Length: 125
Image 1 (cartoon, helix red, strand yellow):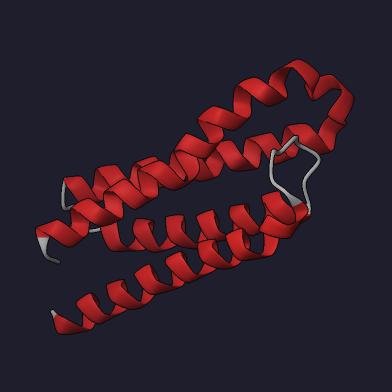
Image 2 (cartoon, helix red, strand yellow; image 1 turned 135 degrees about the vertical axis):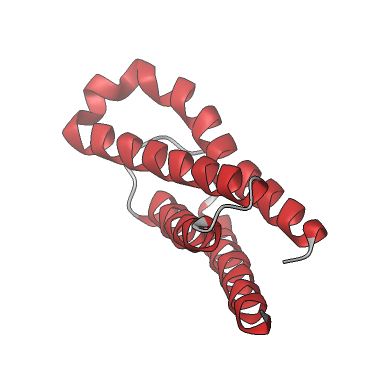
């Protein structure tokens, strides 16, 4: 895979879910008791997706054999977490209702484009 593509994918993965989790965590922790077990599970899920994306970035940066598999898993999990956070969330968000569908669609399109590109690069090898 070309080095520029790897760098762009790494930036996309790092900015997408880990940054969202870093922003989400401090705003959620003060009221986590009121949100109950569902809020805790959702926060743990978002943290797990953030960890998976960081692991994928590290694998891509170090050109490990598992890098493409981790990148695919991170992209699918990131898209799922994005859609979930807009439509089935108990955590606070500052998103206008009219912006939910375009932002969720954008997350799915970005993940799909990267998955298609990774598949193309894998076949080219």
